[in-house]
Amino acid sequence: MKILHIVTLMSPDGAYGGPTRVAVNQASALTGLGYDVTIVAGEMNYTDPPRELQGVATQLFPSKVLVKQVGHAGLYAPGMRPWLARNAHRFDIAHIHLGRDMVTIPAAYQLSKKGIPFVLQTHGMVVPGSHRLAASIDRLFTVPLLRRASVVFYLNDRERTDLQAIGGSDVNLRPLDNGTPLPSDEMVSRAIQSKAESAPEVLFFARVHERKRPEAFAAAALRLLREKVRARFSIVGPAAGAESSVDRVIECARREGFSEAQLHREPGVPPDQALDRMSRAAVYVLPAVREPFGMTIIEALALRIPVVICRDGGLAPFVLEHDCGLVVDGSVQSLADAINTLLNDPARARQMGERGSVAVRERLSIERVGDELAGAYAGILGKETAS
Image (cartoon, rainbow, N blue to C red):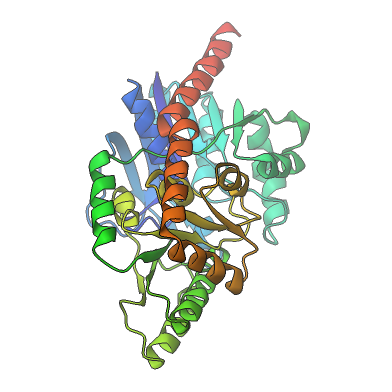
């Protein structure tokens, strides 16, 4: 089986976040199962774009910004269209990580016209009324694609409801969890050793974007530093519009005499280095609003790191069920209290991390997701052949 995965953007700092990580993880798992997989995407900021990621062949095309002030939705990768025209026929099926953008929507239409079966996965990005042009884009483009897709994968009940509201009853919806590669024992051992040698690190690891609420993390960190909590607070991620509000809090911390080691911001790291960077943390915090199914949350749990997340996120029930972190209302005080609780009770935090690792291994490993995708593709192609 020859499989094509299409995602909007790849960059050295992982600026497109979860959808890219999911696409690469899925493609890598399928390659490990013996399938021939290629990832196609737009790219920005590479000096030498990679031809392979995690053992998967990649075709990356320079992206241009056609529409400003709409974020990644304004991107276009003009070189992708002629490549698909020449190569689409080589693939049995395509998996498109669909957003309302000018990379994945045109690619999906191009494949549809060529008769290539395709599935869609929207990663919580296709939400009713998310911006003023959403309804028009959906009517013209998104809805026809949702209805033409062999399967549309969704993460949770909220995303299923959103997709039904947009696409109606004709959309063939199927649940699919995100999965993560499991860290090596060596990585976990190194992380345990490094944590024992320094003050505990509390980590925010995500795009520095308003929806992720990094400024709430920074404000909670400053509140705890004022209370003389012994910890280091790190904000790691590519700039995505909220960096000025974060930097104001950091500047306030400097004026009050707190050092860079105690509270600082770092640029994003390449996706293949994410687990290694995250592994140094003692606590992972993501104050994001309505986070559908945060990859960094399950990655932290796989690394035996307890998490602090908001109760409106898609993984809140999982964290509560397995008692592998604390679920809060998202206020600065609730974040500070949860972080303080875990720092003051390292034995409890360690037990939460261990439970999280077991739960991810059993339910959210990328190997299990790869098996599920392979079965779904085979079922679709069997039906196509039969028809």
